[in-house]
Length: 447
Image 1: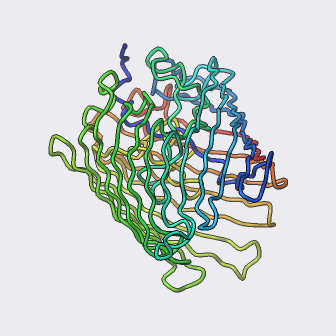
Image 2: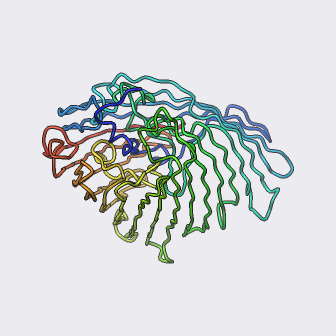
Image 3: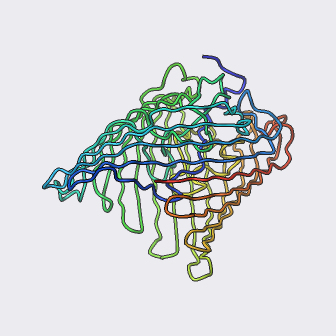
């Protein structure tokens, strides 16, 4: 395969999805067949987006200084089966699904897509067994064993939230192409998994997992993952261990230090016994195969003014990612803005959760049950500009989410991104360091 003059940046590009369907309503299913013990369901979901950026970003060989207009879309469709094994309540389950995705127009602002991407490919193919009430000490379904292609998330997505990076034809002559729809990132399942989950929804629980990525943009790593956590209605505290067992030699140049990396992490969130308070934190320590060590961490506090009109929620978060930190498979596991911080910064401009400090202030309002509004403000501060990039910037994003009914939702997004320097002076924005106004309209459905 070939490389490009932008290839040193590719290891930092672990962004590529800003919203998932789960954030705008839970997916439902249409029952095709049902008996007392067996259910077969049709699962159908999708999303489409229309986007415009006034500026381009030097992240690929196809990036240009001029503005771009592009459209993304995908449909995910498949079948789910569950079969109860009486009388213990244990059950077998299986899911199979495909994703058809495309990008049209001029391609995205960073040139990861060109507008010529079209792909249909299997996404989910997993079988599993749940224990029901067979082991009462572990709770209902206290053992869950599964194998196959499936989405995996650890904690709130700070380390792992699916295999979502979705480059198109604009990078390395299409060598990393997964079918485009870069922003929507419709392909989130790991190619191979073996998962053992112990414990129910409350109390002590843990996971042992083997994950194999089929994503060339991630160098197709193979990972061993272990986690343990204690969960109550108001609090979660946990620990995670990850070891990268191997990477694909054909793509290892993208992440030359990833193989043999070990990650140790502690995390938690709580209201400390105060109903309207939200506290969250995580620390991750990385030990790489060459004995280099890196770290990332954040502290967050939020307050809901539940007695005021529209129930305003205000939060502040500080996060720091060391100079050589590998962001792995992070994603929006909890809400918009975690962990893709900044609509422009997280997807096109950088810093892509490495070599940076980020301040984030969020305000959200809920005028009605089916309408929410929000604003997110960011300040990005590069830790080490000697690496060749100065991605200092500020960004403000406005968004709204309208849940039309149980199946359809709409989300408009407006962003204002202002870098300190242009690409000519070590930044990523092509042409100049002027303000970029970014706009997007998303429509999604679940059936």
